[in-house]
Image (cartoon, rainbow, N blue to C red):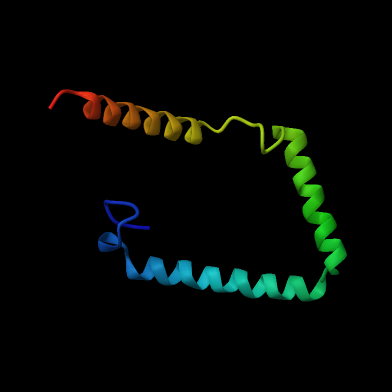
Length: 93
C-alpha cells in the first residue's frame, strides 16, 4: 500500500485496494475449486480438526492450562481497579 500512514483509509491508493480485492476474489475462487476437487466427508473433516487440535496440544500444552499473558494482564488491571474503588469507598467522606 502506498501512503505515509499504513492502515489508514485516508492515505490508501485506490489502485492498491483494487489489486488487493482482486487477489482476495481470486483466492476465494481457487478455494471453491479446491474444495470441490478434494471434498472431505463430515467424518474426515472432523478427524482433521481433531488431529489439528491434538497437534496444537502436543506443541503448546492444554489450551485450558496454558499461560495467557493477555488474560493475566487484564485480570491484574481488573483487580487493581477494584482495589482502587474499594479504597475510595472506605475513605472517610
